[in-house]
Length: 105
Length: 150
Image 1 (tube, each protein chain N blue to C red):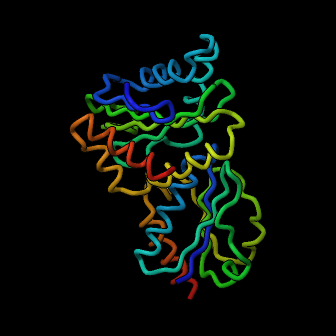
Image 2 (image 1 turned 45 degrees about the vertical axis):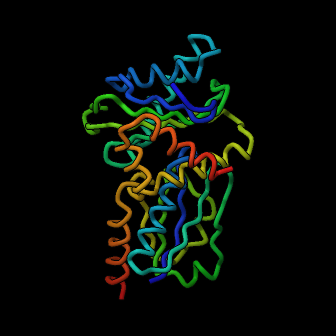
């Protein structure tokens, strides 16, 4: 499964980056291809390419603030949660993404 | 207290409640500031919690703010002498890592902090910080990160 997403929190210094690491680790552990863009205090990093977005089976938005470029994901299946969920329960979030993709098929 | 000015370590720390913790942090963050500025920092921490829980892992909190009242960006570690109840929903807290981010901080410092926060996604690292029994070993663990991040 191909997963892409964005992490963004209020201050943009902590949850954003922990959420990215945890989601990427959980996704890879579950055997998926995953890439999470961060929109934090140092700007956007690991920016998703149009191809990555196009090929993604699902989008995970772990955000406490309005993210920039949300329109890039128009028409895609999206799971939106607070960063806290990605930080505390990354494995469950990946499982949820798997379920949503299965339902879609 | 130990550590350089960027990482401050308080081991076996005798803080017993959320208010005591935030009060102590405000004193550190605003040590060259007026009491009004310290109070402003205290309230900013409380306000930040309304936007989301500071808990990042079982037994671990990561309260953090960006403020014009903070003179120097710092990361503070509090290994508590005894576990504390934080509020109605968060209990058994043993480690509090606090990020104080100065408003309009320079990019290099911000990057250093984000590099550190990424390391907190590593459960093994947090486990070590939670379970190390000797102050000197705890310091070494932080120093190791500091050296690696240079």
